[in-house]
Each structure stands twice: as structure tokens, then as C-alpha cells.
Amino acid sequence: MSRIEEVKSLMTELEEDMEKFYDKGNKAAGTRARKQLQDLKKLAQDIRLEIQAKKNKEDNA
Image (cartoon, rainbow, N blue to C red; front, side, top):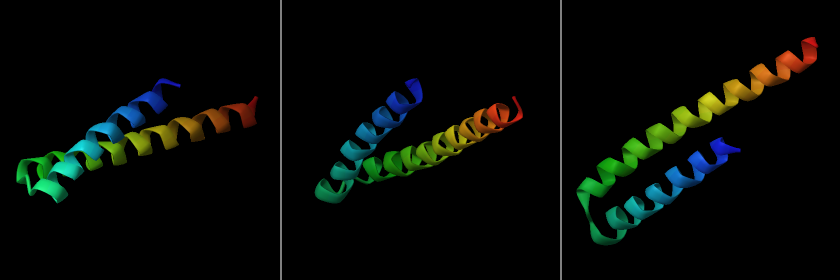
């Protein structure tokens, strides 16, 4: 379940920077938000691959 914690942590950071960007016009927060979104995308893909590998392993067992 540590992957869920990673996603939650990343989402918390993203939410803070999105608020700073949209509400306060902080351009640096927008840059951080874009990076966090990219990290979230990568993390999601890694999790998808782990799930698929586990599913395939169980199907072959």
C-alpha cells in the first residue's frame, strides 16, 4: 500500500501548488505543478505495469 501513500503525497503537494498558481498567480508554483503532474503520470504508469505483471504472474500460476 505504499504506492497509495506516494500518490496521496504527490496529490497533496500538487493541490497546494495549483492553488498558489491559480489563486495567487505564482508562476513558480505553476512550474512545480507541471512537474508534479508529470511525476504523477510516471507513477501511475509504473503502478499500472506492476498490477499487470502481478495479474499475469497469477494467471500463469
